[in-house]
Length: 348
Image 1 (cartoon, rainbow, N blue to C red):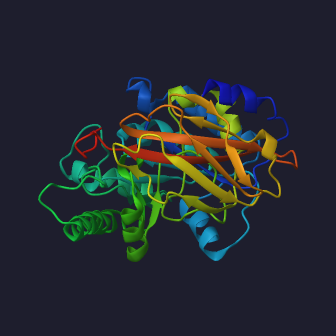
Image 2: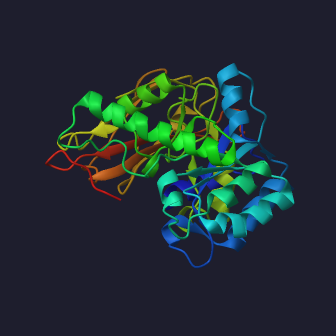
Image 3: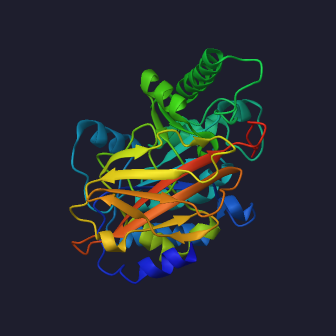
């Protein structure tokens, strides 16, 4: 990924996003696991950058409404989200966000709050944030891996269980905060085609953890976000990400990101509008394997395939391309979830 940032950063000057970017945070603290944390100083620096560069920081619900209604997105649009509902979001991030007048969303799993697990916020604290204008949204009831099916349940029983889990969490969020956005951040960013279809039937929006910008053609049951933890959030990469653009995707195959164990090197086929894309500059990156040049099979369709087997569990293909109008880079990410040999998935 360092190759990606070095190459793209060379063209960062005078970039203006033609899409929205959703940022994902977990901990904002100096004493929490670095893999899911951003220091308070780094968070403050990022928020100051957005303020100084006149980014349009809007609520997640406003972005969703714009996509649903086909409304054009303002340049330099950013949405701020937090997963899990840690107390340090209130103690450390909230004062900075209030100072700048930035709206934000907190995705919470209800069961850990009821169990008063530390370091989660209480319902009282979340209600205070909601009263101040924050959006409190669904991260499932128990924060389990939703795609994992029990050995003793049928496909329909699994779907019914997940539906009940999400509805139970949504009821509690509404009960304790007065809000019901029907927006789910998938735990661990994991989803499959059946989960997406379930959310669509329930009238829910789905938010992932795969990187990329959001545009009017983005999948409302699999909106991407840029994770913001220390390993991915130095200022150079932050500036690049908040200025990225969304590919105008027409179709992606396979539709299902969940892979059988033997499907270790999936072929990704992307059909897109290439009007503003420098096709010669399009490059993909396989997580853990580095750069992989795509193969153009037609004027508006390319394929990419990993050279080596993907890791068991979660991985990604990231693809980027410069804009012909010299206003930034397009960014698309395809998440994968590969099963173990016995058909199960890793936990955590």
